[in-house]
Structures are given as C-alpha cells and as structure tokens.
Image: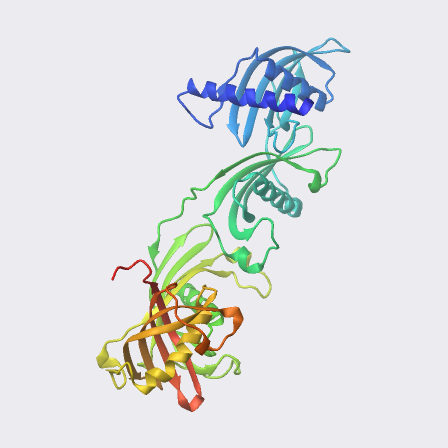
Amino acid sequence: MRSITFLRFQLIAVLFMFNSYADAKNCVGCPVDADVNSPEIKKHLEKVLVAQNEDCDIVKVISAQTQIISGVRYKVYFEVKDRRTNQLKFCSTSFVSQVWISPEPQMEYFNCKLQGRDNRQLLATLKEVEANEKELVTQLADLAVKTLDDIDTDNYKRVVAEVLDAKKQLVNGIMYHLKLRVKITSCSEDRKVSADCEQEESHSQEICKVQIHRSFADSSPLNAKVVSSECDHNILLGEPKEASVESEEIKAAANFAAERIDQMSNSIYKQILVRILEATSQVAAGIKMDLKLELGNTECMKNMDKKANCEVVSENAEKMICRVSVWSQPWKQSSGKSHLKLSKFYCGPFYRTKRSLVGGESSLDTNDKRVTDLTDYVEDELTNRSNSQYTKTIVKVLNATVQVVSGKLTRLTVEVTDTNCLKSENKLKSLCSASNQGQQLCTVAIWERPWLNQKEITQSECHSTQNVGA
C-alpha cells in the first residue's frame, strides 16, 4: 500500500512539474520554482531527514525548485528545529526521485548549519582527484555507464571511451563529479559482449556529466550510487584540414589501414598499399584521418613468410579504391598494441580506361562455354554471400566480357533469383527451381589464374529488382 501511495505521489509531482513548465515558457528540462507550501515536498523532506539521521522537525521551506530529468530532481532550502537541543538550522538538499529504480529518493547532497554561524558555503569546494585514485575513477566511470544503460530506452551497451575530467567534493561522504566521453556500441545489453561489437558504434558518441556518491561508512566502489547524470550527443569536432600524403603520420595510418583491410579480406592473396590519393585530418579527442587509398593484389599468399617480397601483380592489374577513417590516440598506446584504430572503411573497384588494360576488354557471347562453365561457381558464391535462407540461381546472363590481367578477368551481368530450396537442405541444383522471390541484378568479376588452379570473385555488386516494373 505504501508503494502505491508513493507512486501516486510521484505522478502528482510530475503533473505538478508539467503545469509549472507551462508558466515557464515551456522550457523543458529547466529548473522551475516550486510551491514552498506543497505537502508533497514536505513529505519528501521528511524522508530525507530520516535517511540522513537528522532528528529534526521542519519549521518552513524557504525556497524550492524542481526539474524534470530522468525522473524529478528537487533542490530545497529549508529551516529545521533539532528535537533534542531546540536549535534552529538551515539545510540545503538536492535529490532525485526515480520510482522505477527505487521508491526512495536518490540523494545528491545534503548539508545543514546552525543559525548565527558565518555564511560559509554549505558545500565543500570541488577538488581535483589525486593520481593514486585513477583506478577508483575508472571503476566509478564503469559504474556510471552501467547505470546509464539501466535507465536508457535503447538496448545498446555503453562503454567509457575516455574520462575527460574528474573532481571530488566532501558531501556527507565523497561526491565524485566525472565528465566522460561515452561510446554506444552495437553490443546488446542483455547478451555476452564480444570484441567485434565493442569496436562497432551504433550511435554517435556522447559527453556525459555524472555525480557519484560514496559514503564514509562503505567506501567500496560497488556501493557507490549515481545520483545525477546528464548527456550531450552534440560533440563538437575541429574542422577537417587537408594533410600531406607524404606526412609520416599519414603514411603510418595508410599502411595500418591497408594491413587491417587485408586481414579482413576473404582473398587468399595479400593486398598491399599502392599509393595514398587524398588525406585530411581532424582534431577530436585525438586525430581523425580520412584517407583515400589505392590497394593492389599481389601473388603472395597470406600464409607465406612475412619477409617475402610481395609486389603488385602488374602495373595494369585491377586494384581497389578504399576510403578509410583512422583514429590516432598516442596516449592510449600500450605494450604490443597500436594507438591507431580503423573506425570506418569502404572499398570499391578501381576502373582503368581500356587503353591501359593488358590485351583490352573483349565481349563474350553469353552462351560461350567459358560463361556457362562459370555459372555454377557464381551461383555458389552468390548463395554464400546472400542473406536469404534460400539458394540462388542465375536466370539469365545479360552481358559478359573477358580481359587478360595476369590471368583472365571475366565480368558477368546476371539476373538471379531465390530457388525453392533452403540452404540448410543441401539439395542438388537439379532438384531446385527458380521462385519469384529475391530477384536481383548482379555484376560480378571472376579472376582466374590457371597456373595456380585458382579463381576468385574480386567484385560482386547486386541490386534488388523486386519493385522494378516491366
């Protein structure tokens, strides 16, 4: 019954707050003056006094403000009378009501002083956190983002990207004031976290200011409480500036990006950086470098001795153009770990004019044996790369070309569709028929090197034709 009454009180308080906002030019989120005679505020203060072990009666509320944040924040200045000594005291308090987390108010600060004393500040001044508290601050920052995850509306896990500032204050214990740069990952809050999803960001980063209270009675970080939080998604970055492609820092970032792209590539052959085409840099909690790179294939297999001399197959061989973003944060460098991070990349094929292609590009009859011999291979590859649960089949070959490039590069434009066979069934293709689902127009490039008994798809691009009219 108490909890129902308390919840009803909270709802009344929230409605009261919104009515106040109507008179405050609809300033959503701004503190507004509250009625000092409100019985709801008096009930709250009685709970606060009990929680602070203050054996006092409330004489009067001098001033009060309320603010809608993630809950309702109260800031009240009031007068009390000590029941044992009959002394009068002025008290100042701030607390947050979040009934979905706890029926009890979440204390931000509380302080009282006897009447007649000097007008010193009710709160101790903020001080810088000492160097030997670095580990504690890290633990408190992790606690803060966990609390943010508990009260947010999305299901993405937050992690601390950087502690920007840390101060502390004596307030019936210690109040830590942290300013954090927070990364919103693609990891689900209710699933096991992997290294891959922690690197991926689902939303833009945010700057969060949090207050965390630790009592003197229990100084463990596990028993600290987040009493206030405020996050801003609008992080201002420095303007991007053109950078020299000959800069050592740009070269290091380009080589790092090329190595990471090579590691993520499905090719069994090593890809290397050919040249840096464009570069810009931007200051933002480190240096963000946006690069346009040209990458080329080699004849070195990835499992070969790293000391092997790997060069691009041919001056005229097909290459890739990649646009990448690399972050440099030297202060985060640790033993055996680079301070560089590849945060974003996109790669596409690099087309040369026909004059520069070895042997030129020639048309092929779509019924040519070379084309029909490749269709099974292309179907299998498109099936493997498709998100559909059904296998793919080529309905029609629309165009075909061949080109000599340290082997043969065959380009096909094909119409494909889903079959009625599930991938998991592993049926023979002869038992599967085309359906009218998953219709796509695909362009693929198949690079064959007979002397290595090897072929691979170096380009694959498909577009849905499901909604295209006849």
